[in-house]
Amino acid sequence: MKTIILLFFFTLFSYAQNEAEIATTLDNWHKAASEAKYETYFSYMSASSVFIGTDATENWNKSQFMAYAKPFFDKGKAWSFTALQRNIYLSKDKKIAWFDELLNTQMKICRGSGVMIKIGKIWKIQHYTLSMTIPNENVNDVVKTKTLLEDVLINKLQITN
Image 1 (cartoon, helix red, strand yellow):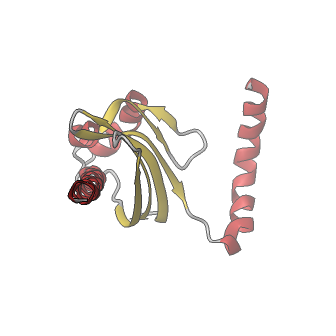
Image 2 (image 1 turned 120 degrees about the horizontal axis):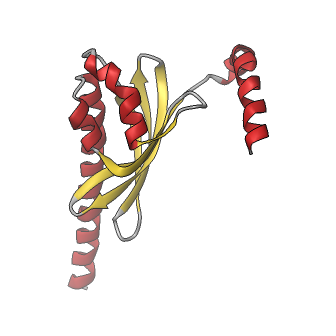
């Protein structure tokens, strides 16, 4: 019985420790952007990471995202995101985590979601998706705003796929 209780507490502690490490990594990643710390920001992402932004054309590997972001960081002002709410989930082997977060941003509330992998003892962002939230009562207005630009993109993507 003692072994089962110890195993339970070890598992609970291990989960809480991993969750805290993941939350700290994400908070530090967002903080590095707000402080325009380019090298620090990208050190939190794995070598093969992917970043998907709010625009339909923003689907970048790490080097593409670094090239996109560099001018913002060079100006001393990238972006400022702070977590309002976050959910973190772990695989059974505690080497993969996935999460979603609501963020306070210059675009108002956005949603971030992603996957993190544990490399050695360090959590790295493997995949991150940023999306803008749209109140349901405003969806029709947003669709009207997007239609002209995105109809062209839809046609282009349908032709190439």
